[in-house]
Image (cartoon, rainbow, N blue to C red; front, side):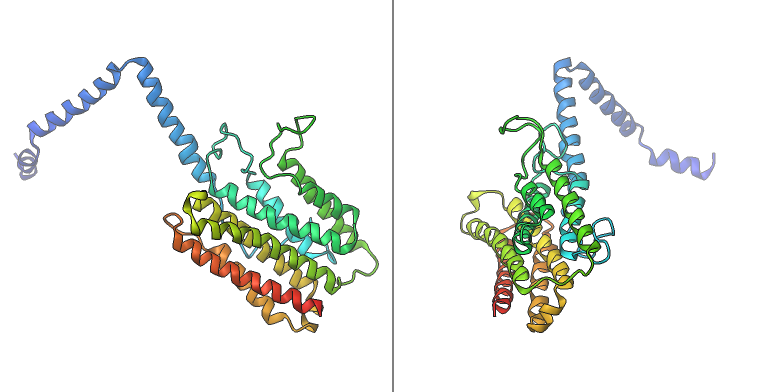
Amino acid sequence: MGIFDIFRRQTVNPVTAASADASGTNLIGRFTAMPRWMLLILGAFFAAILYWGVLGSLLSDTRADLTVRPDTTVLPPGGSVAVATAAMLLDRALDKGWTPNDSLLRPTGLLEDMPAFQRGQHSAISAFVSSFDQGVGGDPELSEAAEALKTAPDRGWLHSDFPFIGGSAEGRYRDAVDALARYNRAVAESEAPEEGDARELRLALLSLHAALGEEAGAVDRMIDDSRVGSADAQYNEVRGAAYAAAMLMRGLREDFGTTIGQRQLAATWAETTEALDAVSEKRPTFGVGRQDLVEQGYFLMRGRESLRTLAAGLAR
C-alpha cells in the first residue's frame, strides 16, 4: 500500500460520504413524491423568475451614451445635426425595443427603469421637434414628425381610439424618424443651407427647459413624499429626458455655432451641457434613495437655470 492510498483512506470518511449520498437521494425522492400539481406550480414559479426576472433584467438598458453621433442616413452633408440627433435617439431606443407599452407577455413587461428612461427621452425629443417645427414655420416633414410624436409612449397596437387597432407608439415613432430624415435630406439638397436665426434656437431651448421643468416637479414631489410613486422609475425618467436634452444641445451647438458665438454664450452653453451630462450619466448601484433624488434635482436645477440664461441671451 502506497503512502497516497494511506492518505486517501485516512481523509475520506465513509460515514460522511454515505450520509451525503443518502441526503441527495432523499431530496430527489421528496421531489418525485410530490403531487404533479405541486411540481407544475414550482416549475411555473421558476420559469417566471427566469423569464421576467433574469431575461427581463438582461434586456433592460438605460445607458446614456454621450459619444454617439448620427450617421449619414439621417444626417447628410448640410443637414441639421440637432434634427438628426433627435431621429438617431428615437431610432436607437426603438431598436432596443420600445418598452413603455409592453404587455406582461413580454419579458420586459415588469420593468420600471427602461420604460421610464425611454419615456423621458420621448418627452424631451417631442418637445424639441414641436418647437423646431414652430420655429421653422410649419415644414410639412417636421409637422408630420411632431404629430407622430404626440402619440403616448404607452400606446400599444390595441387601444381605445377608433378603429381600436394599429398605430402603436413604435409605429408612429418610426414614422417620425422617417419624416425627420426626409426633412434633413431636403435641407441638404437645398441650394444654400443657412444657419437658423436666434428665434429658432431660443424656441428650442425653451422647449427643453419646459420638458425638464415637468421632470423637476416630479422629482420635488418624490423628495417630499416617497409614496407618490417609484423612486427608481422617476429617477430614470429624468435621466432619459436629460440625456436627450444633452445630446440635442450638442446638435444645436453645431447648427447654431455662429449665433452662439456672436451672443457670447459658448461658456454658458458648456455649463448647461455639463449639468445635463451629470444628470444622465449617474446610475446608483443599489437602488435610488432620497439623497440620489436630491443630488439629481440639484444638477437638473443647474441645467434648467442655464437654459433660461441662454434663452434670455438670445432674446436680446
